[in-house]
Length: 126
Picture 1 (tube, rainbow, N blue to C red):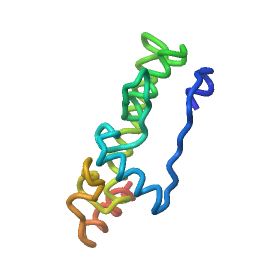
Picture 2: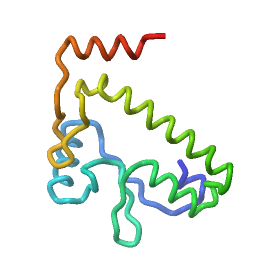
Picture 3: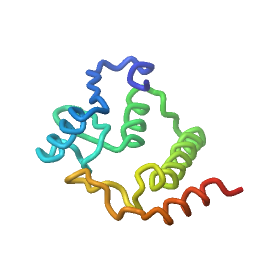
Picture 4: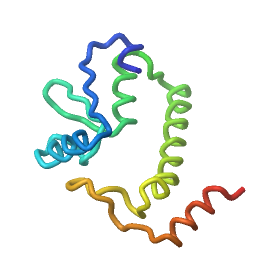
């Protein structure tokens, strides 16, 4: 969205959430095309970059959408709040205590059913 709103030319390549898509992500991991083994990525001047918030900040700076000073701090505060939410929700979503292995993409340290229930309980607590 930031690329479009900022009027930057870009090639939008989407990988479907299908078996074929997972195979494509695995191929790119094995070939070293995905920094940290993850999507999204953005290629600029022949270099590949990842991490969504880093990409957002870069595009924002290039297009004037990312402010400076106190407004920048406000934007960063929101981005970091979303990162905190992700950190708490991902174990429940993936059923793991850690993220996926950056090379293989396989889940690490699987939670057992009791641990999954405890995560759900804590997420739903007041």
